[in-house]
Structures are given as structure tokens and as C-alpha cells.
Image (cartoon, rainbow, N blue to C red):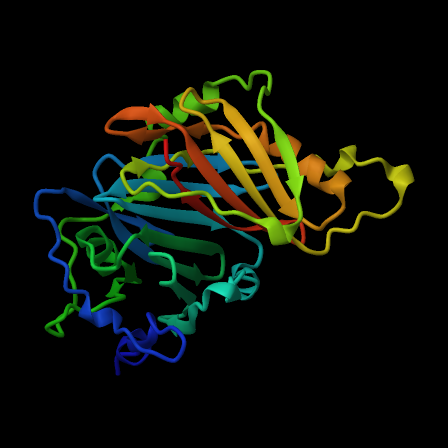
Length: 323
């Protein structure tokens, strides 16, 4: 019996209403060439439009691979990371309850999953998967779910070869061509350039505001967002030990302006956590490396939103700033 037939009708549910994922009706743009990619010994596979960006990072904070694409006004992201306990991490996924998300936990072919969908400000859908050794996050952000790129991406997802979605006529969706192993990819030239870029003197402003004063970055659907290629790595050892234990309880929201020339601009940290802790995170944000955003093929400024919970990075959403 197909488990998907039972779980998918409520993936888009929000506030006790049902919007069936199986009824994605947008026609996929046949002019765009999509490449099918696989990870984790074929545990998960999906497609991205040609020209996607690829980054590989191995540090004390993160060991994994990230892919990023922007198609028809839709942001597509995927990450594959090696973790000690992926299933436990899945249970700690942060849920923005203020946005009335539709949340569904499921298991397909031995792969645990969690789907989080939000439709209050455009359309945002995150799919989390956990196997014994790997952790996967697939994300799509769009002004509307009725977009050809949204349909193409979601219909391309496979779990151990099994389609996550069925097409509107009840037949399994398809992905043409053989899959390329993500492990075989090399970092994109733009990504390699971003890693080589030296972090210059920070010339922006840093502000600290209470969590209640948070103001989200404005969006511009015509701008391809920036692609951050390094993790936020705060130097907690720099906190003065003589000032007593550090209170890390609480949330932290950070807006970072990423400039078109590759420099980090103004930073605003919204939180009620101790100021000395917030300064360490702000200092780490100054060192972020990224591929600048683009508008009509030209570099543009961009606002990056980073959410932290109890000192652990839980999610990243990108919004473009109005120029």
C-alpha cells in the first residue's frame, strides 16, 4: 500500500484546512533544463535547474554539501550533512508557530521525515529527511505554490527511488535522465571565488534590539538571493569567564545585509539573550562569505535572515531587499 497516498493530502494543510499537494497544476517550463541529482547512496534524489550553485563545507560547525538555485522567481535549496544522530536532529526542527505552519511527520522506506509548510507570507515548504548517517533538508520559497518551478522541484523528489509526489492524473511523477551523484560535483566557480575572498575591515553598523521589535527583511521576487557558503561560527571562548555562566536560553534573529561587492554590511540582532553573547554572534556574522545576490544578471545587495535557538542554528531563510 502506498503510504504517500495517506500523508500527502495534508502536507499543505494550515489552520484546519486542506490544500492537497497532489493537485499541483502548474505546467513545468519545458524550456528549462533540469538535472537530476542523488545523495546518500541513492537515499534521496531531486532535480535542480542547470546553473545551480554547489558548495561543500567541512568545519567544526558543519560537514556537508549545499545546493542553491533560483528559477522563475523561486528559491530552491538543498543540504546534505553528516551527523552523529540525524533522527534526533529531526525531532529538534524549529517550528515557527506564529506562522500557523502545517507540520507532518512521516516515514518512507525507512527514511524518517518532517514536512513544514507555511502559506501566510507567500509559499514556503521545507522537507527534512533523516537516515542512519545523513540529514537532508530540501526547501522551496515562492510567492505562490502555483509556479512551474515549485511543481518541477517537488515532483522530482525521490526517496530510495520512490516518487514523493504523484501527478494530478494519479500517475507517479517522473524525472528524465540518469541521476548524477552529488558527491561527484565540484564547487561552482562563483562559490570558489567567494571562499577565496578575504574578509576586509567591517565598515557597517551593528545594532541590538529586543526580540519583540523584530522587523523582517523585505522581499523582491526579481532578485536571486545571495548564497552563503560559510557557517556562522561564533567564538564562544572569547566570552570573559570571570563574568559568570552564559545564559543562552532564548531565540536570536539576525538580519545581515550582504553587499553586492561581497562585503558584509549592517547587522541587526534581535534577542533578549545577554548582550555579551549577542556581540559574539554579531562578530561571527561579520565574517560570512557568500556569492552576492543578482538582479538581471548584475550583483545586488541582499538581506540574509538567520534564526538561532538556544545557541544552535536551526534555520535560514533568505529574502531580497528592495533597492
